[in-house]
Image 1 (tube, rainbow, N blue to C red):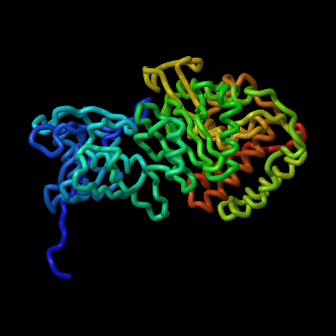
Image 2: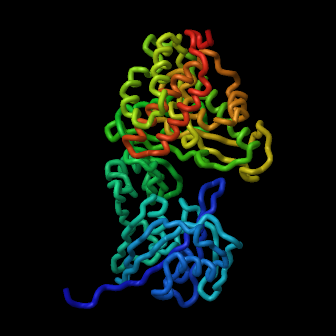
Image 3: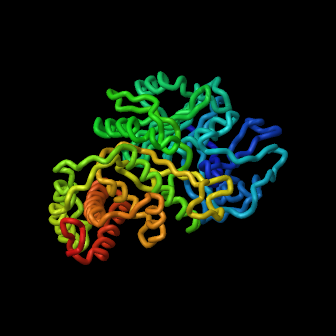
Length: 485
């Protein structure tokens, strides 16, 4: 092969990120003076000084030079790499790094090339943002590690939703993050809410999750979801049409549904998932009391109904789940689960109510008042708001069905369970406590089997912890009423 090898510049881009009650924000600077893209917003960024400088060192240097903040190299996290070509035809490779911890307050440190600096919501970036920068942030928000952004002659330097050249490259699992749904789903959604100017993939990090946040051309935000099966679609639509309206703003509202596409358009619910949130103990108690109130509203949205004869714990699946989980069970786990399954046959059925079915912290959204999540408020604080999303497992069942996955949140924190019960308005009956133990054990084994099959070590470990805790707490067999004999 003859000829000179292709060379191109290497960029580093700083995603300085902070968390707020409304969601994550990133620091942007507005370019000014005799520079490329003057007047447009961009991430703090720059080039390597030469072959002596690595990309992390360059990022730390550029951050100090442009914003005045001091970053330790150990706090730099790789976010996404973007191969970019400008409208003029020149290409470059950009390394985008996330930083969540730094020293100092960001400021305009180079006023000759920057005339403004501000925080912007990650999901609502300003219109006048450089397309290259926007491509990197969109790829980062989608969770991919590599993207291509090759603009065409005549494209604008600023981001143009009608000429978005971002292409997300699938990772080694083969998953390609879809920035837009398939055309039929787009048409369905736009028939319901009008033209959608921007799509953002907000799916969970699993292959069968397909959820997008849609921003309307005339304003407004919705969520568009495509279910993995007819069963999940039917359950979510039913929940949205039956008990969800009783929750008002604390649950999404169904705008449109298409059974053939297995798609729904939902209103946006304020807040962010409680999973991973850091709160003071006092605020946690206030939040869990509100969660209890939310559970009560779901369970009382319609009169309770007698349980059919076949409505006991899902013991029929126990053997299949045990087979899938066996390699990761501790000695004695399998015998313990089998004993619970045997005892489940003698438990009296519990009356059925409407249930969420996947009531856990990642599906519960939280909004604090303007004073922030660490303000000092009591457990009856009226400024704490919680809401629920993801109803695809919703169906009638015993009320304790909604405590199976939530209970992991108050392990070692009896005050949180007490706060939940205060909001719920009653304690559990002996029969409910017995049923909860059995359902938690079966859910733990199911989670281990699923985690083993799909390479999810966190799910495996959570199931193992649950079984260990249940075995430590379970000292006597259960009678048909749930009482110890």
